[in-house]
Image (cartoon, rainbow, N blue to C red; front, side, top):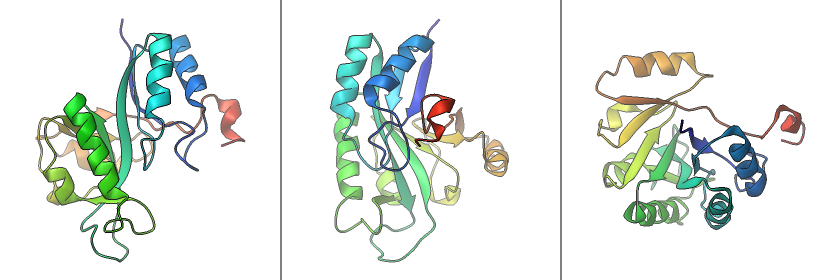
Length: 187
């Protein structure tokens, strides 16, 4: 049986998660996970460590990032935000992921935090899986095979809204913030 985890944060998600990369990979191996995606918040700094640790553990690594999406990232004002998880499907997707992460962190789009606008995601290729989280303005995005909605165990109203969208693929994904319950205090 293969087991996959598609949304993991590590020590590289500043103030969002607790868990050194090697400890996360060790925990995944103990659990029998064969494929796992790193999706740290706002950056891809952990990708090299992730690749090396997964290779040693025999886990297939997937590379991703979690960013915020807003209606217009070029406006220097507060706007409604929603999380989006980008996962590279292949080498071209990884290049695109790095380009979008760089754009989100650029002086033109960074406003209190890195952010993309919906237009950036509409222009993404099928080399990226784009997973929209709670708060997404669904009228600004179009269903595509590689664009999915993330169901959230902690957001029932979002889940109900997603279920009314028959044309969308839905993926259940829970957020991790620490490795084991005892880590909650450190987090």
